[in-house]
Structure formats: structure tokens, C-alpha cells
Length: 351
Image (cartoon, rainbow, N blue to C red; front, top):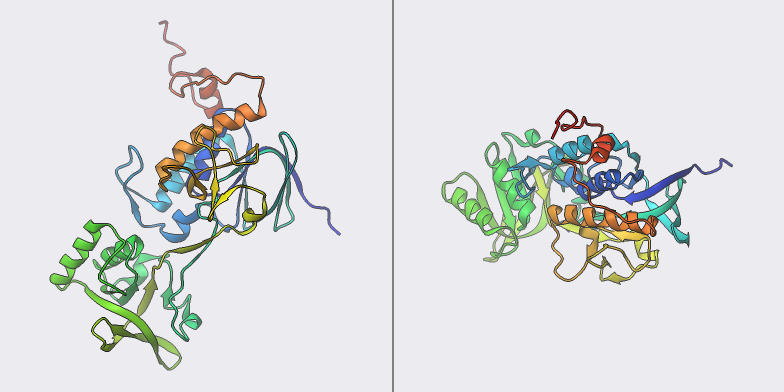
């Protein structure tokens, strides 16, 4: 029997989404080495898994970027710190053996001896909420999907989209520029941003897309291929809607998975933390991003970045309780420049 791989590392981050990646940067500035573990086979978390081409507008000083571009930029930013990535493996066990002494085990048999653990696992292990129609599952991954991997695939096609949230509206509006889109939602009330709903209704009025209120009842199959779906409308009439491609955006069904067994204080499906250190009920384990909860919590990427910055200082203090941590600025600190691998812009300045 092969002995498990054992990695000694300062800190372990669970989750390779944008907040987990920024945590690498903040810890790196403080001189801490990091290993990042993610159950997905690629870096990027939900940004890459669910909306790689969806525009994001609320990243400070970045007017607009896609989910994939955000991840690409974060990867470039953390490159000086050479983090170690362990992808396609889920953290199954976290055991605290003493102060600053944790054993982390993954589904791939990798074992980490680490001094602190930071959970940045987004909504946890997630899966899309399903469109429940008999026989539909057999076509998932063919012309029926819960995510858009390649928007160009839908150009010039008849596309039906189910959902009333931001993802459904965002993709309906984006694809309507190049495809014949029918948006179907079970009721007249939407969870999406009002501006998106107004834009959708305007496009419908201009006959550039269609909207149908109702619920899916039955698939239309021809020669073993999915070709349409029957929808019972709010008026009680059942209509047949033909399509080339079917998309569904009902949101995510979050599951904490093994995290629920780590002995942390939970509030429903989130991890309770304080707002000074973002530490959990177990000293040495921290939680940032969508996985945590506290009074006033807002599930925004920029909020997660803020949490990562404060958590980094808390982690350093936890690991070095006798040492005072000084705030240093990347603009002027020679130590920060050294860790970032950049030249000191003031070295030749006599002042």
C-alpha cells in the first residue's frame, strides 16, 4: 500500500475561487506559504464554472471584466508567491492536534500538516437546481445545459432559457444579440435586477426575443433527440416550444459536504465567524467569502476581498502570537517589494 503524500505548509486554503486566490496574495505579503485545495478540476471556482464569460461590474477600479478575466488577473497577481494547487480533490477531514497544528486530508489521499486553515469554499459543494421534467436528465450535456461554456455555440440558434434570476436574465440578454431566445419563467415576479427585467421586456416589445410565463410539463423528443418542451402557461394553456438548445438557471443548491463535520459553529448552511479576524469557533480555522456569515454579511466578491485582507493579519498573529504585526504598504515598503519581486521605485531617490 502506497504511503500518503504528506505536505508541510504554513497555511491551507480550501477553495480556489477569487476570494481564495486573493487570500493567497494577502498571506504572501506577510511571508506565509500557501497550498490551495479545490474539488473542481480547475482554478476559478464559481466564476469559471458558472459564468466565465459573464460581465462583472463591481470590482473596484475595474469597470468591467469577465469571470475568467478576473481569475486570470488574480493568478498573475499571486504568481510571485508560488502557491501550490491541489485540484480535483475534496477536503474530507480537518483535525486539530494542537495550537498551530492541523492535519488536513483530501479525497485523493493527500495529507497536509499545516499551521492554519482558511475556508474560502464559496457556497460549499454546489450543484445546479434541476429542471424537473421526466426524461430531461438523459439530454444533459448535449443540447440541454445548466451553464454556458461557449457562448458562440448558441449563435444563430433557437434557444430556450428557464429562470427568473440574474443568471437567466443576463444570459438571455447576452444571447439575444446573436440567437432567437425564448425566456420562460414560472411567474411574473423576477429575482433579477430590475434593470435587466426592464431590458428584457423592451427587447420583447421590439420582437428581438420572447418571454413566456409558465412551467415545463413534458419534453418533445424526435428520433432520440431533444427538440422541444411543453409549457403550461399561467392562462392554463399548454404550448409546445421548439428549440435547438435548452438552458436552465435556477440557481445553486449549496451543500457544505464534509465541512459540516469539522466541528464548526454553523448558522444554517454557513460558517459563523467574527468580524475582526474572520475566525471560526475553532481557533486557527478561518472562513472568508460566501461560505461565512455574520451580522450584515453581503455575498459580494469585493466583500470577500476585504475579509481576506483582515483574515491574513489574523492568521499571522495566530501563528506568531508574540510578534507585533505592522501594517506595511506595497507602495513604499522594501519588504513588500522584495516579496512581490518588484524593484524599489524609491531606491535612487535621495529624499
